[in-house]
Image (cartoon, rainbow, N blue to C red; front, side):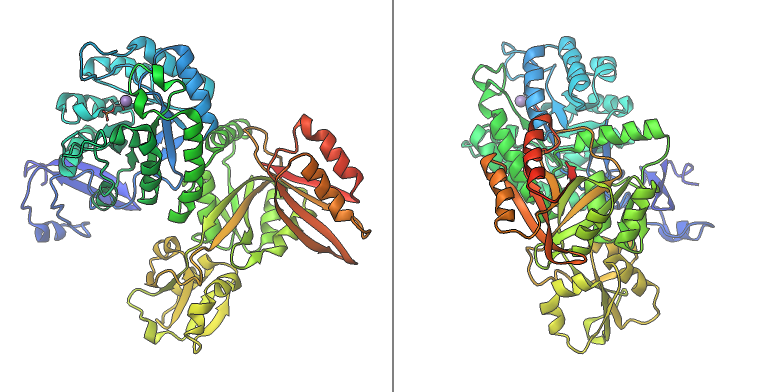
Length: 605
Ligand code: PEP
Ligand code: MN
């Protein structure tokens, strides 16, 4: 019937529903469509862009570029020079940005320059160098395609193509990259509206390629102090209009080196999924865009700042992203079985969220009824990893897990800090006035004490995890029971948020660690966790701390736990900012061993 009406028809499956998109004809009678057998709902999409719109695809799209997922909860940092100038230049910059946290590499081989006398790029030679960068560093590579005639070369050498600002409305090029099927970074035109930009994205999707990343790179305004004006408000506007991920390019947006980092930080705070930053080791001699290129060290400082900012907005910058991706694909290849991670309680818990932020959206999870059950699952090889909380900034250590780390012979292979924002969650339509009971784990009750004390009449029921609490209310008939949990849990179980942000202090962070049967085998390990006991003689603890100090080892955490059966003797858990498993650390470890009754390395990660 839709065909008869002259519509182009697209089919997809969205969250278990079959969705049929009818494109090209307005004014279809929705009531008539809904009367057809098998049709649950007919929704008109009022915007001129259809396939890119949120109505068409309510969930965020995650664009996979090689091992890297753009649009998930991990901030993707793309970095590299404006143009590939030589193999040496490309690799020098690549090694530096990789070390500082970039997970994807950029570099132009075909440069659209304002002047025909400026350097035009190394063309195919440049693409070959990009492929070598990927080989050597493991970073997927993205480069600009300026003409459909380059399609075969792009297919051969690179992981993603960029459509430059000047080509945003080059419709033949858009159709071509749509057919090419590679992920596309679509830059916003210098003087294009968001609607025009989304219509350009629609060209690519209408060719069957939905792997589009939108790149805001500044627009032309009357302001001459910066090269362009970075439109950060485009981020929340796009997040509402479209499901496509958004990358911010603060380099072309500002054109001035020292303006790049502040805008990059702001972009992450505003909800950008990714950053694309120009970096050059010798910007004074760069063949293009030197004045806006960061020095590698400045880029390193920026990623450290982003690492701190990202958790505030519920995301992560992951310095071992590529190492982990390589390790996972290696393990799946050698063991032939799917990797799984054990988490506490239920899906939708903060542990689940931590797992997603650490491993990405596609990590399958195995919920367990207790922390001990997580350790058991990893020990038995039922799951390769477990994610457990170790400490919370408001309520302190989760002692049980420190004790389990000692008891089991497993390794810490990674850590991450998650901001914990608690919501009061109820049945859809439930109001605060009708509540009689609130269910939550005891830690969540502690973290929301001030809010709960204003509702003393509510009965408090404890369960083992926030996800379990939200699941429990979803299975109840009555509206008078609420749960405390995350927005994700509310969504997952179809529940509604009654009150947002009820934690007493918004600086509420939990540090999680990842445990595995084997130590982390690859990547650069920055931190280690140790546990030791000293016996009960004077100065024993000081002796160990002295060794750390003398070797300039930064101690970031020290926690003591009573030893069972030995009153007034303690185990010390220490986190240090170094890799204690290296050969150069061995003598220091030996010195510590001599001063302790017991010493165990819990992991380097
Ligand atoms: C570039 O990324 O180097 C570039 C030329 O960008 P834009 O198209 O945004 O000017
Ligand atoms: Mn440039």
